Image (cartoon, rainbow, N blue to C red):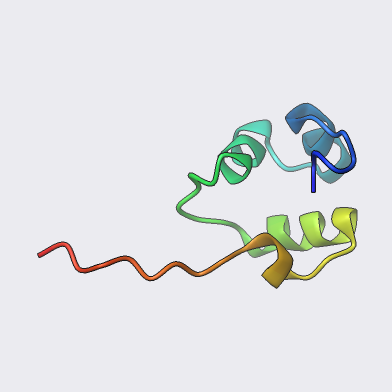
Length: 63
């Protein structure tokens, strides 16, 4: 979505108030935790639903 709108991490950070490190983690798909308020801000910015931002991936057991 950032690419479609030609937005940089810093642009999204400034527009939403979300710390740029968190935006970077989300962009790189390496975030392990996401604040609900951050999701709300991103959904409002991109006019989308949470399901458009997140995908559940079932990881195999690591026993």
